[in-house]
Amino acid sequence: MSTQPTESPSKASSSNLNQQVGLYSLAAAVAGVSMLALAQPAVGEVVVTKKTIHIPLAPSDMPEPVTISMANSGVDNFSFILSGGRSSRGLRQLLVGA
Image 1 (spheres, rainbow, N blue to C red):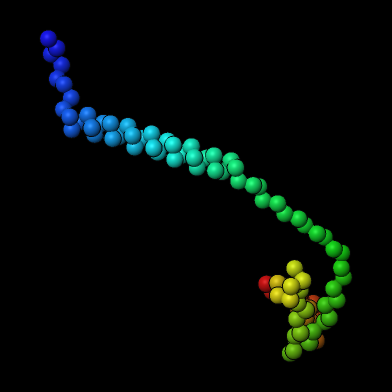
Image 2 (spheres, rainbow, N blue to C red):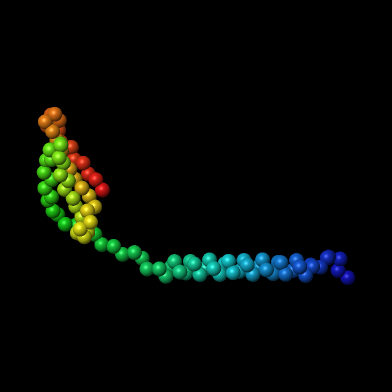
């Protein structure tokens, strides 16, 4: 005769449920990793165009910004103002806005 206590049915079903949850979690993790492995890498392209853009010296009371659209879509991404006044002793200031 065995002297070890036998597991109660509720403990056995709880242990079985924990084992199933662990296996399902492992399967979900493996599925997630495989989905990441199948994803296409991002592809990009950089086009460099040499272009000289004239930024005129603006009077300090009425600065006129020069705007630039990076994608040539009409949406301005940057604005530049080159300013310098009589009191600045020949110093110039370039302001860049995004």
